[in-house]
Length: 224
Image 1 (cartoon, rainbow, N blue to C red):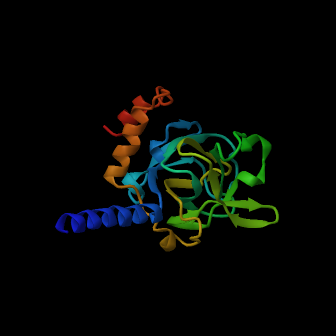
Image 2 (cartoon, rainbow, N blue to C red):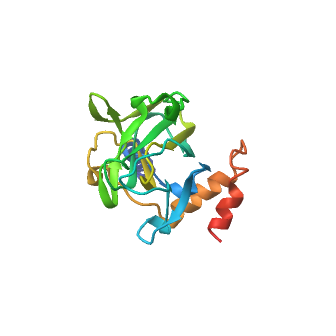
Image 3 (cartoon, rainbow, N blue to C red):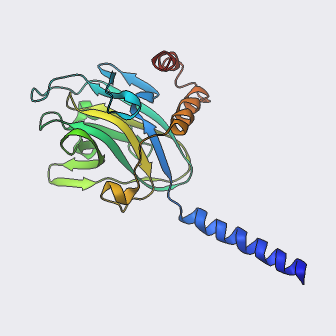
């Protein structure tokens, strides 16, 4: 009887652990400056108030407008299929510096929105002159709606954040399967920790497809 009880408790523990695992949200925190590829004129810049003191942008002055050049690519390995949302830690000074283009492949087509101007991929960044979280949305001509991405399988995905207006800043990205949350506190957003950065950098370094061969050296120099 003792052994049956122990076995029953063990099975129950595994079962409960499985339920917890199934209900847990996927949460991935990424540094913007640790992108696999950053294409000029999008650059890494310094800010003591940014996560780990760095962010990326197309340099420019607020109010002047301009952009549509440069982008950053992130290789994100998602652990399970399903619906995902993205949040950005951003600064958007004004109405001329408050948007990016966003494609997340393969859920999105690999389309150059800087050329096509497809509003399906236009992110209208919430305004604010200090760092704040904003959920990535569709800024369509008929209104602004929260975006969701559906992935049919786990594995490697590519997120592209492309300049639409210069002077719009992005510091970090938070990936989650919590697609219902519309405010940052509900989504449990957080900035990357040292462990997150280690995973992000080491993941880039050992990419089996060698996708960061031209950028890994610059990352090492930036963090020496």
